[in-house]
Amino acid sequence: MALFGSFSKNKKESLDQGLSKTKESVFKKLSRAVVGKSKVDDEVLDNLEEVLITSDVGVDTTLKIIERIEERVSRDKYMGVGELNNILKEEIAALLEENNTEDVDDFELPETEGPYVIMVVGVNGVGKTTTIGKLAYNFKQAGKKVVLGAADTFRAAAIEQLEVWAQRVDVPIVKQKMGSDPASVAYDTLSSAKASGADVVIIDTAGRLHNKINLMNELSKIKKVMQKIVPDAPHEVLLILDGSTGQNAFEQAKQFTKATEVTAMALTKLDGTAKGGVVIGISDQFKIPVKYIGIGEKMEHLQIFRRQEFVDSLFS
Image 1: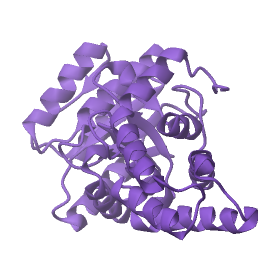
Image 2: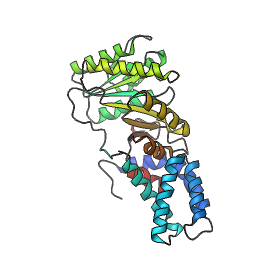
Image 3: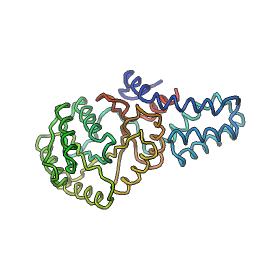
Image 4: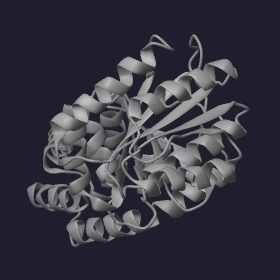
């Protein structure tokens, strides 16, 4: 199998391991769906539909996949169940390709005037701070100079957690006391990053969804203030979702994409769950690239999402 960029054997093994629960669950269901069948018929397709929906791919995306497989069945007239795996793999990979999901090389950054600014959004408890820490680590490993901004000023714990990560990864952090204006923290962070010649800035924001209007206003204000320092900031609005919550992650994606312009997503905690199919559905439904996936505790267990490797891992 051709591996893109620097997708090493270790990363492939981590990915296989991280997706093992989802894979095992999908395969068990798949083998039950085709038991005693030699060709793909309506019953197999009905069973397959159930497999995908119960694997958290989501109803709409499942129907698209089934439709594509039906087209192939009617075109090829006879299709053995043995081929089903490969066909599923091809169709899901094709679907992900249509959803603006481009395979990128490791933690590379586009050329920008001044630092590349990532604003991170997502509810509390999804692994937001941990993902920021792991991103900082991976960017630093790639030779980038990183600055963190603790703009989630509503929870003392959020500032403390981010500080712990900043120390662990050994990158500077800009913070103010709890209850400070988040936009003011973002402003200070960008000023400091620009002055020190940083390559990338990662700004944490408050994980509250109970009042969407407040969230919208706050995120808009943070953006406006950042643009005084770096005119085209933020270059990326990264939504963190907990993959282990399955359909709940869809709901959060829906809320956040209404509240702000999300440009990329990271799905965390895929290693402890059989709900990895949610990556496929979320990518398809929101047409926003899934950029990172979390497949374990270690720093290097935050991986760049590569659709082909992901689908290969799921169906190999």
